[in-house]
Length: 200
Length: 119
Image 1 (cartoon, chains in turn brown, red):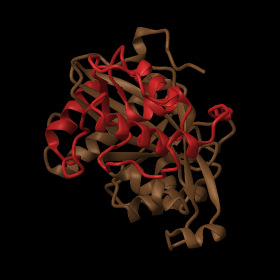
Image 2 (cartoon, chains in turn green, cyan):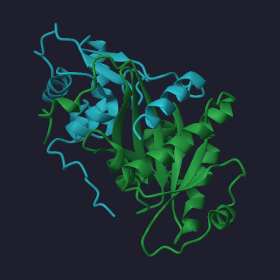
Image 3 (spheres, chains in turn cyan, green):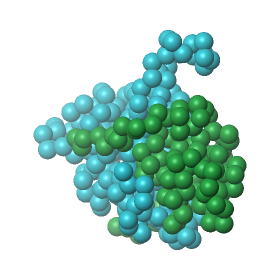
Image 4 (cartoon, one colour):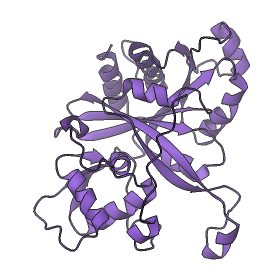
């Protein structure tokens, strides 16, 4: 139990005024935890949200017996970007059925980075579908695994049926520079969408 | 695949911690709402979980998600406790950027500059 963290680094700088969040999403075992851990300045934390599975549409006590609840783990980390701005990264499972979790996660989020695995590209469709449903813009980063087939990015783009403007990059979730570059590509894209991208 | 770091099983059930409530008294708390403990109010009368939360927050600012993570509480439970502590004046917040503003180019440019500076 670490209710009284020892390190001063646990806390935000007193000057920080604004917090923003980006979601790191993808299917099971695609590297979300690794990605967040590589970039976070704090020891990555995990919390959980108890979810009622979709299907139980009526949110009253009478319906309680029929509800199934699931615990969803959220990994997250933090990057202080300047004296007044801090960025939180949330690693989020991509299952469609956690509707309320998605509503909470996407509210106020700047965008999402979808991590994909070229050995299991089709498993990314559900995640991308959920993001589109919630109107959250995203970029896709192909996480590099040793035994993964070396597809060209064009082939992957086609296989994932991405829009022409959706960024697709390779990244190594274990590498700080590579992971940072993937986030940069995402934020450049988000800026482009506002029509304000300068010195890209 | 990194093994999941699940918060340890709790000795006290969540509904005991929150007096049986599933929803916070206010709906403005986001995962990245920043919390600051006020240091002029006594902790007497607070239940043990709220006291732990105050002790965690007193040294410096943390987000709602970080408080939940450090205390091994589900986010929903942490929000109920935090909202109570806001009602009693023990905690004040710096709101995250409102939902209408994520497309704000100025914020995005600042994020981009901050990320580029890390390379």
